[in-house]
Length: 146
Image 1 (cartoon, rainbow, N blue to C red):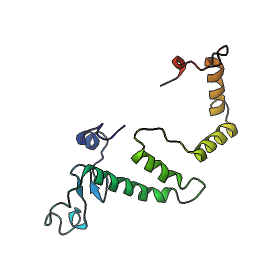
Image 2: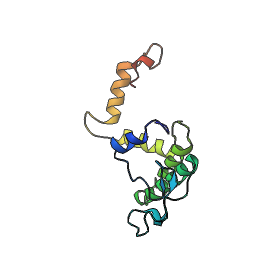
Image 3: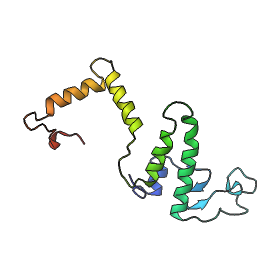
């Protein structure tokens, strides 16, 4: 998904994304100030906040996203990962996110998963055995799931 894929109306009606930020309104490209908050006794008296460019608004929203994510990633070895993922989302231009620490965690999860029948390791093994062309040592692109 990229910026502009969905209209403002779709975001508001289908996904109920109305008040998405306390700092900027992406629908009007205006900065939200204490005076423009609906609960302010001055609401409407000063009008909307300063106009923003699309890039300025996106930057404010991503900064707020990073800030709000901190409470979900306070502890543990992966606490800095969410910030890297958000920054990649902001500047990655649709490229795949990659992180060695995350790759190692996924590998450990796959190798240590001992659940019966539905473990990732067992499902991967079945898919490899069933689909790999062992004479050419390839996984045919036609067998890859979308």
